[in-house]
Image 1 (tube, rainbow, N blue to C red):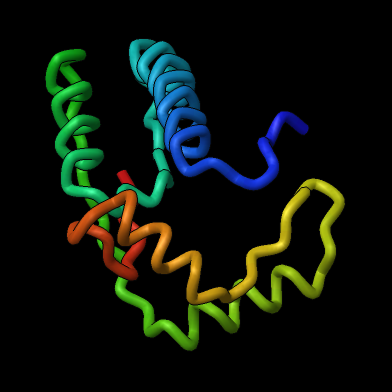
Image 2 (image 1 turned 135 degrees about the vertical axis):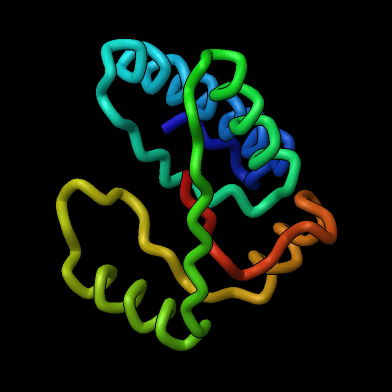
Length: 119
């Protein structure tokens, strides 16, 4: 894996950006063939939601945002259940660490919140 050690936040955010571009490229080509697409990207930042809404408008597509409001304890119960399955196609375990929340708040700003947003 190409992850720098120790983890560099700027590397992480650049990687997320590259992934978003690749995902949008694929989704826009599929949508151009009249196939509905669902992007489950988290979109915890207002800017990310606005950007993808603009991309869809510019492509002549429609977009709907769905906010999933699930209590934190239920979300962690689901994560822990998924981690317990030890699936082969998942290379990382998600764990609770206060430093992860601090990382997100520092790099995502005050727009960070604990809800997933799906487009």
